[in-house]
Image (tube, rainbow, N blue to C red):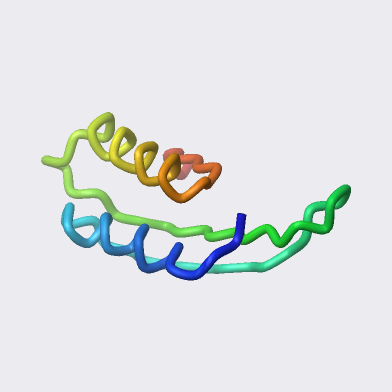
Length: 77
């Protein structure tokens, strides 16, 4: 659900882990059935080789739970 501070919290966590945000795009839409505001944040990031992906994924999952977000982390093909 959309609320203030989402970009800040996600980008802060990434910066603290040395992750570079190469691109960032946001969009505010509305859920089709309920009309609830839905915020989309799409980032292309560069993760340091020494940072375990599983560790970063766990931290992002925790953040998503705290912020009531759906989060997907995937490798770019």
